Length: 303
Image (tube, rainbow, N blue to C red):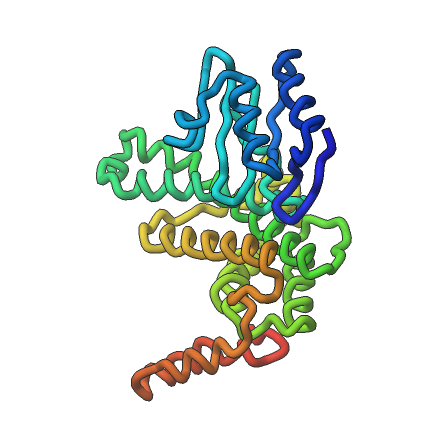
């Protein structure tokens, strides 16, 4: 089978009878595969279903077919491809065709699950009882959140740099990666945007904190709890956890938007500061915005 690559990933094109015969032959040989297909003619798809004994009318009731005994999963996407798996229910291998973006998306998934768990624990009043399971669970959630937040900032910045076409030397040091990200943002005129105000600026708080940890903190060794001088803990305030969740969700939306839309994404539209000032209804609110966001127009961060 010949694979074709595009922005959405790889797929196999079924455009002639020989392609269809090859696909049907895979079933006859009981080959194991999970691929994305596109059928150039609807009749090819109907003939395929008929050959493997699936009624087309029955299929179109749900546009997917699952047979656990046959370990078969077929699903037609609204975007024009057909997912066929002879393993049963399995995920597509990669989220995108960009390795740095995939790393960011995967880490976002891990971090979101941790935050959802933390929010659920905090919302249960039993957590305030020191003998409760929830209170004990905090001692495991706190370092897990901290470690995964550090890694997320790293892979997020590297994903942005990758999509911008900027190479970054091999390093795990957040201060260097973040600095390169800021420099790139300014050189590409991506500053004074939602990307800077709602994503990059909030993430700086974590980068700044890392810089205060004594003992030459090794960011690449966080999973080994390698630095005995680090006593960082997460404060489990519901509002802070929700705020943290909002930042990573917005950042994930941005990375996906940037991958698919490029610089057309609204996250990179300039003039965020001016728009916020114009939308302020009172002089008092305008003053607050100027104090909070005036740095967006500047070329360098003022700490």
